[in-house]
Length: 430
Image (cartoon, rainbow, N blue to C red):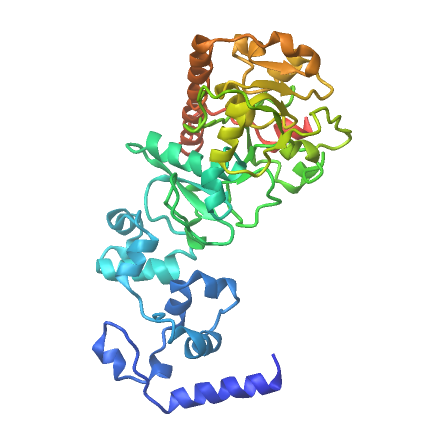
């Protein structure tokens, strides 16, 4: 900070020392006191997570921020029960008082204020539940429209956990990395920085390095197997060996792998009985992330690319297309194509069709091979009817039963029961 700026900030603080400033708070007495003497800087920065992230960690910095910005923004520097209740809707007063002797003989207001300023940093437990915090990206409108994607899967997982555990002691909260909590169709319970404790486990999607939130317990959810350009074959070395691991599908030949799959069928994908007015469309998406593979592009020259289109647009194109060339072997859009009655041609990698099926979410669906072609020379194998479509829909819907197994695992781990959860060491070091 320049000497000129330091001098200006010093002037601001000196002015406060000698001048009463009216603050819009609910406490009329506070309005009459000198702001400098009564400015509760700890409460101020606890009230606003963005201040802590900006490195505001003492009275001087907090006061300067309030003078320059906070006052005009209507920010409060006193403790507010209403604000606390919004931040911690799951705070259990009775539990907190009974667990900590120094809390037994004080008011509910004082209990909340203690946790807000001190207890959260001491990692005190404020309820007896197990909390799964799901690290994700900010929700955005594209997530609502695109048929699939890792971020949508994360929010949908939060929704399913809370639906399945409404009567139990496990629940989920979302944690967008940029701390922008947006309303979405799935999970609208959000965690903050200060609620990670010994009854919390963080779930990171596979692209996250290390453990930036410093949680004692961690789950790595492998949506896209390591071994791509952005997740090289040694990416797991950035994780702790004791971190738990769940996979979206059985992408490795390892018997210890456990599946956590919540494939969601978008209702926009169904057979609209259109005339096939488009010869073909194609999808590349994640296929170009694969390392050591030269992609053989075989789609016709005038085929329509559907990468990054809205769901409504993709549904229309798939319904009107005779063929769908799908290079992304991880995309749910291959199923969307089947539901929209287009002939799906998966562009093979170095595996056989049988090997692909065995390492996919369809490894237990015997009839899957007749729903798609494994390359242009396998088109004759596509042979299914409406009754077959009902079977594949039921199979996909039943995949969410893996969430029940996952929740049983987490419950067993925290309650000292026998559990069998693979770790980074089990999967990648042995």
